[in-house]
Image (cartoon, rainbow, N blue to C red; front, top):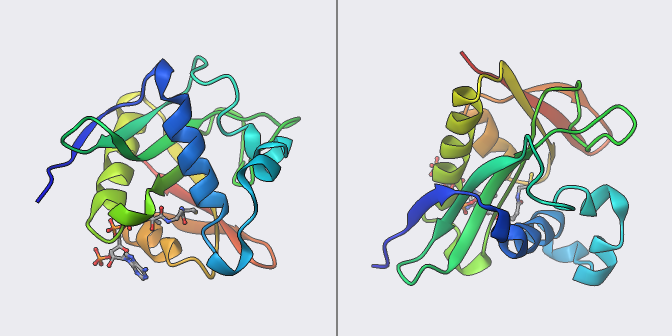
Length: 163
Ligand SMILES: CC(C)(COP(=O)(O)OP(=O)(O)OC[C@H]1O[C@@H](n2cnc3c(N)ncnc32)[C@H](O)[C@@H]1OP(=O)(O)O)[C@@H](O)C(=O)NCCC(=O)NCCS
């Protein structure tokens, strides 16, 4: 079996992060939107725009040829430009995606753990995310210690306390 390596996200990872952002936005196969349409939406594009700004960090998974297959990263948002999972300035918000052909092999959980470890290492007290309740990823997040703190009609904002 191909071995997977995790490494910190770099400045030149814009492409894989954008690919994974599109995967995350298109998690529901019944509601796929074209990449170009998604990336034209400021509320989607701001998860990767101008990567890698100060305060941006994350983890990339690569196969044994060095090809990225997934990513989990954090970004800081503001009151005037909040992410879907924004809870407060200074609380990084998470995005997670694994390329379709690599799912169900533990890569998503490994990426999530590694990126949360980076957040803890960086000294953050908590991190947040937004996830639609119908997405099984919500169970993954719960099993990794994220708890819902706010609920919209279809999605939850979840927080993980780091200590
Ligand atoms: C969510 C996602 C990142 C998970 O990555 P992954 O590598 O497939 O996940 P893992 O293999 O680490 O599995 C994590 C858990 O989810 C479970 N799982 C995996 N695929 C599943 C599926 N299709 N349905 C239900 N549970 C599933 C696994 O069983 C595992 O639980 P376990 O450890 O108790 O067995 C990946 O499916 C993905 O990129 N989805 C599209 C983007 C997305 O939805 N991102 C999150 C937006 S909030």
